[in-house]
Length: 264
Length: 311
Ligand SMILES: Nc1ncnc2c1ncn2[C@@H]1O[C@H](COP(=O)(O)OP(=O)(O)OP(=O)(O)O)[C@@H](O)[C@H]1O
Ligand SMILES: [Mg+2]
Image (tube, rainbow over all chains, first blue to last red; front, side, top):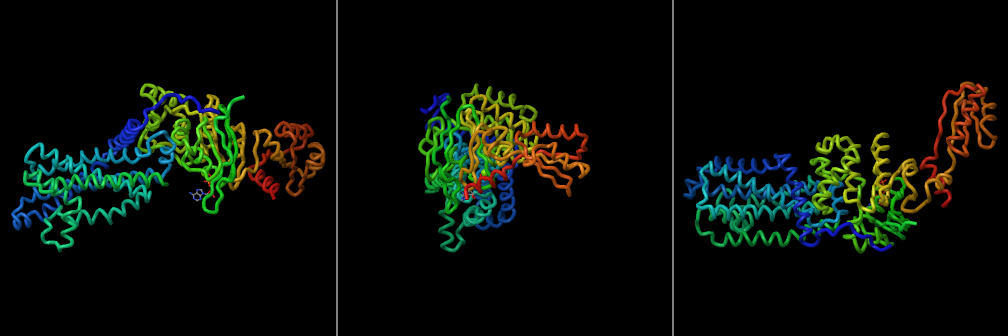
């Protein structure tokens, strides 16, 4: 039998894929609206770190280094909000892959990549809202951006690193396919990045090899850039470095996730 | 004569040293239902997954609406609808949102999309719960949504993997009606099941597989004849009536009595009508009947018969 006449010619190629990405992201956002605790988790986490470190380190550091600790801490907390928010990608994706939903998606005339990309896009939109809310709380503590332009640039870098981290989580979820395991693994890779960093305290007092890591790993580089943008000081290489980390992580983890996802 | 929509030739899939599908052939025409019947591990899901492009066959060929499942998976996905063995609807969306999601992924144009979602909700009677979160559904409601979702783009080929497992008898009957309606609208349907009765009631053609191999196949009626005959079991009140009851029931060869259990067993040539006739004769003769039962040949009988033949 020759091929049937297909009922209509759907958009294909990049346009079709973009429609799929948005469709999948939209589905996720509908669920977020319905269960706002997904959003509140990373906001609460950010505010928690903000308050905790203000209380613990605020006086010490301000006195010792002559830094305004709000201006130091809030950028770090914004970055934490974004990278912990990105954990959601791994979690929800693993749940989809574990159960029947994924089989149906694979049988549909849709872009393979959209299953992953829709997720990361939705999580990034959610992340942008969370980062904005935490920044507002930072304002209440006395944190300030010097200009609207620098605020936009700083928030864009923050949300950007969150997006790149969403893809790291997507790759892990595509590999292990278990929400519990994805959560547990994050302890091993995300926690060292969060605490082996300049997020909470300057790295000067760290042993040389820890300092080398802490100064150059992506979370610190972005936090440094956000601080410089907030203060209107010279960012050095940190803004360019942030962009390079974001692009570099995406270049590695987007194709890797897609390959791992296709394999199973 | 219709052209077959689904054509399967020599399909084979091996996992390590397990032969999951060992050379399967069948064709399904538009408007007909093929029942793929087999016990756990027979290879039903593997077959469905190959035909819906989720897995690749190791050998053989299959085409859906003329498209090759191995070589043209993107095109095949446009002409199939799948309801897999595990439920694949989103708990945190409503039925309407789930259907809309799939309609969007099939790229139905917007006005048609809305109309189609409404139509399916109406036709399959999902209205009572269509705007509630799926998380609140009963197992039967969720399964129905799952099956209906496979129809969203009016695909010419529909694959249902054990659609009625876990449903109560009423939900099962409803779903049977709905599956029949899909075929009546012109779809070629492949349905897997572990229940002979389900294949019997629904399928135009039946392929019985066991450990990847076809053990029997044919139209439902032919196959049933082949399966052996229905058995009528009658318990009489008084064992003294048994000889007379046996005489009334039919010619000696097909009747057995068991005085200890006050039981009469009749192999029926002609199923229910003959059972009725036998019971009527007993009743006319004034023999008190305590209990009776019509036993249909079960899937087990089929397997036993056919595995015996193979050895
Ligand atoms: N991914 C896999 N790896 C190894 N073996 C597999 C895999 N998937 C299925 N099998 C094996 O292939 C055989 C057929 O499995 P399949 O799932 O197709 O059976 P089924 O007829 O759908 O059974 P059920 O009624 O239990 O759903 C089984 O022996 C199963 O263990
Ligand atoms: Mg199965």
